[in-house]
Amino acid sequence: MADELSLSLALDPEQGVVRLVLNGHTVGRLGGHGGDPKIRLDPQFQDQFAAVEPYAAALFANMGETLSAALFEIGSFRVNQAGRPQGMAIPSQRRTQLHLGCGPDEREGWLNIDYRPSSPLGFDPAKNFLNYDLRAGLPLPDASADLIFSSHFFEHLRHEHATRLMRDCRRVLRSGGKARFQMPDYEKAMRAYVDRDPAIFADGQAQGLLNHMPAYSRHWGDLISRAVYEFYEHKYIWDPENLGAALIAAGFSAVREDNAVEGLDNLSDMRKDASFYVEAIA
Ligand SMILES: C[S@@+](CC[C@H](N)C(=O)[O-])C[C@H]1O[C@@H](n2cnc3c(N)ncnc32)[C@H](O)[C@@H]1O
Image (tube, rainbow, N blue to C red):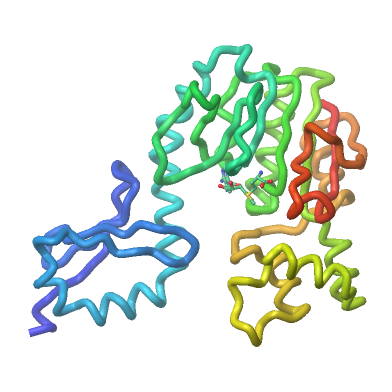
């Protein structure tokens, strides 16, 4: 019986979903992120699906990261198709300060930009928020912004995407405008790891950075893995030296390392002592 059933996955860029197709019928969809896609089954196909469920569970368990990446990619097509024209149409006074990879830190007085594959498309004027995959650059006019800020964002991009976005930041800034980068301080983290610094380890534990791990995996190797890989989301390690060189190559005229600035940088407990700060002048 089971060998008469055919189960396949179909990427649907219009809907931004991966469809689950059983014997030619869409029986459900995959959603979710972070290597853990969830099956949302159409109830009317529940019985038919039962026959292939163990197979599907094993298949998806092994393909979790691939499927999450597929969801991320097909979401990008749809989100940016809507976000590009809407970004270009945002009134100029609402996009002089840009906050890239804002996450939940949506700020007043800034154009907050983040990529959220399963959230509403385009520009939300109430939050001054634009849903956009920044690997494609900024959907904004040349020389139109004074300040760009990002916190713990660029390390989520591959090197080629990060450097392309740096060039685009330069394009969108007016001459003399600034791009400010707050990023994980891996030099500090790795020194602490080599020294087995007990104070920094205790601080990481107090912040709950290992709470998701089993009890036997709460050691220095686990803490440095969390810092470097961040649930397998980090793609590249930057420090003031390689970031500065990349920013100059991207067309910025000067770069300097800075201290944290109250009211501008993200100084939450998790970020404050775990960051370096670099400012580049367009
Ligand atoms: C670690 S969070 C940082 C959030 C916030 N800035 C902070 O400091 O807490 C990284 C953010 O980058 C966003 N991000 C990752 N890839 C992105 C992309 N290609 N385009 C836009 N945002 C992206 C994620 O959605 C997430 O909100």
